[in-house]
Length: 553
Image 1 (cartoon, rainbow, N blue to C red):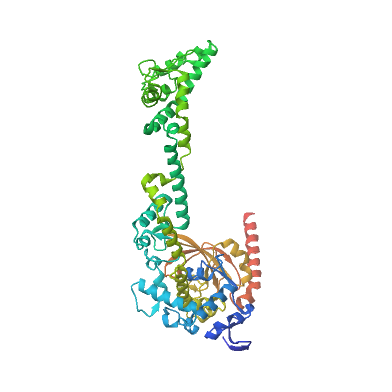
Image 2 (tube, rainbow, N blue to C red; image 1 turned 30 degrees about the vertical axis):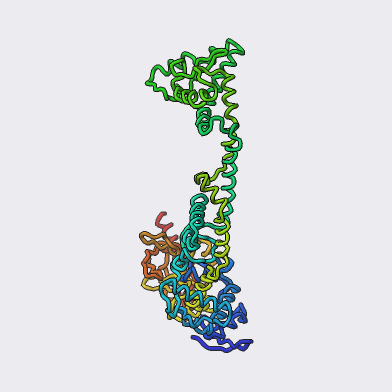
């Protein structure tokens, strides 16, 4: 039973009585304009989550301006106030559906910009002249942000650079994407930003300076010219092993008794003798480069007593480093080894300072042309123009916000400020998850619960008979629901393990299994007889226990 009541405040509110309490009737544009004057204690809810409701998550996210996952009264009021300011007549919000362009109030700057953005969006979608803008028009935002258009996100893809008509500018964007990684433009295309441009220039300057040292200090850094790198590589391959060999020889010179111990024992060869061997075997490679003796020199040929596992690497050392720097020779002594390393130390140190960047992949001429040209400054200007563009993404976001509010805002108010959708019986409230069919009855007040255990702790305070169910469906993750029984008899019927069928709001059926029951009377009649039923159950149990004990005796 409902009744209508009028309350006089700064704004005249109409209330209806349903569910045992007065609720405000939101019916007119003036109701929306004065919603901030409605005392919060008269709101049926003061907060709601942005997920888990039968409502568009995107609309809820747009209202949740602080992004904390909860919508509160100030955020609802801000959404209503902004929507009223953007429309010539907020009464249109009650109609829902698509947003008529004529409804946008262009008498002020923000509204005029929003109207222009809406028309431009329709033009980009290939629908110029269409009088309405709908939520579906924003399903793929990349259609509204062509790569060749400024969109306010500060990302310049190659297509936008090509509009400037400068080949060097397009190549610079391609180089930045290749070396720094592309940042996705709102069109979906990769592009350059102020940050990636600055990083590219810094790295390019570092690479150019590093390369320039090889020219200015060629005598020290490049003693063999272009072949120096090969010589350094050949030395690095055998450095540890050659150092080990000469250290062993020095120990043998220090104490002649050490020579025998520093050479492989016969048992090491015996262990190798019992298996098939190859020159590259790890066990062979672990042996010294050559026989250890006081003052011995390292043979540089494989047939002169050199460990066969290292013959190839030592041969490369002889050809690429020893011969070019020290002259042709068949053996290498410790002094020559020290001279050889000193000759290449500067180049090795220079290589260690090589900037760690993919900019090295660009050839010298290309890099010099970039740093000497005007393309970096032109790209910086283009990025700034995109950031400050009149067709910014912020305005597209505003248009998207308004069409979502046009379709959904009043529905949210009818489930937040009031519960009129729930009590109207013509539609389900946004918190109703579906319908549970069990024991030849249907339960309409069904909610999804994330933590059934925590929810059940507060359930007794609801005064409702509650069924907690686990719902399963092939190909989908299980969901947990709670259903309220508000009529009929529940004696000995709703026990854990009982099965039912749950239909969600999309019409899909789920196998529902009762997991927990919170027992409460479902009617005045049941509340009256509950104490007597409990006494009857107690007496019945006592008689059953007495009979069982006598039977056992």
